[in-house]
Image (cartoon, rainbow, N blue to C red; front, side):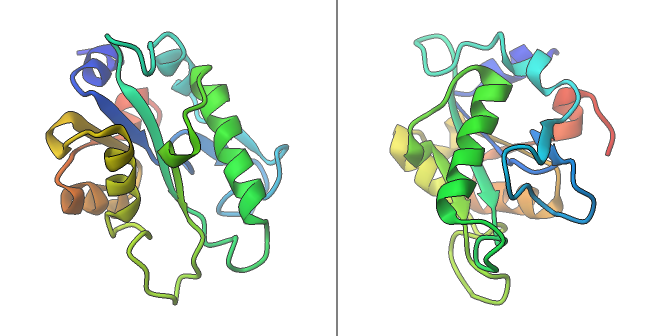
Length: 167
């Protein structure tokens, strides 16, 4: 089954950002802090650009990403949001509305309901689109992504299986 078939089985597909759709080009940084510090992961553009997003026959698009670097002052919340918009555009030629682009800006030692593995970001995107867990796929690259999907009750797919790359 190709990536298009997998994506079309769901009405909502939510992606993790870092090391799922993009990778940082600056050694030592877990996520980009500026527009020129990232590139798409191999195979992402080819797999996603021909998909019809947010149309009657295609899935809706969301991104859910832990971005604790905001809390540490390495980038502003506005820049982190802009980077997610740029990522969506680069990967899919589509930029969903801001409620579909969720990020957790909290420091790692601050308890919150949005930082994965908590399901808060996934649930917010699902509420925005009015989609149930059975209609949603979450694509990620880390155990916290898989756990967030389980806690939200959604299906999960490893990014490397969808896009064919190895980390």
